[in-house]
Image 1 (cartoon, rainbow, N blue to C red):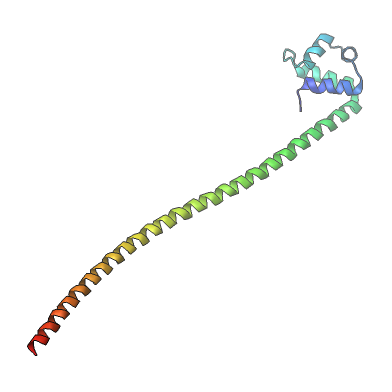
Image 2: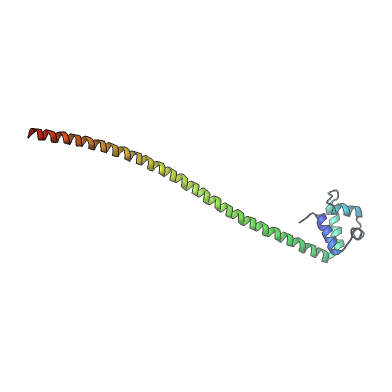
Length: 149
């Protein structure tokens, strides 16, 4: 939706009303009409808008409102679509954050398992060393038993 001035220009064109004719109908100087249409903020629209609306009449206003309503509906549709996209992005972000939390928990668990594995390897090595020492003692004992026979 454009400014009041650009909308007014479109409405005048659609109705085939010249700026001079609008000035005549409203009692507003044509130069002021030109400035309003040009987007000038020099003039108080609240002063001129009711006179312009009265001069254009109901059929023209209905057409203008229908046009404006169509633009508003287009904007509303666009906003709904953008909201749906944002909702989808939010869900994707939530899933990514959950995956990051899961990954962090898995790293903690992996670290704990790595520590347990290292301890198990150390204990296994100690058991292997004890077993080797036990074999050596058993071999010596066996030798001594054989020597005494």
